[in-house]
Length: 146
Image (cartoon, rainbow, N blue to C red; front, side):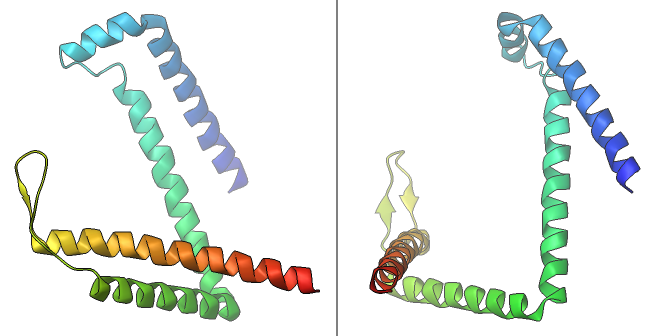
């Protein structure tokens, strides 16, 4: 498995270097001219490599997080408590937020439902910021007392 991973990484690295050399060799002005014509064939291969690497990274992180959660029950319990607390804060923020139809700068109207979700996001941010600051303050005070 380790040898296969090294070979895949080597191939991705070499392809990335080749595509980067092509991009650098062409120059900014030519790339801008191609982009103005709608031709992105020079940049597309590098973008696809970036997407593939990002997908592989996210998939592996998610896989190992899930494996770790189910092999360690204490971690699973703490994770579920954290997710539950986050959902409680989200519900409180949702029921605290008000939704009012609002005109936007481009002349369109933001629906009452959309306004309520924006308010929910803002309230969640404020609540979580206060909780984080309070936690740091409490931890600092406990550390000073000891």
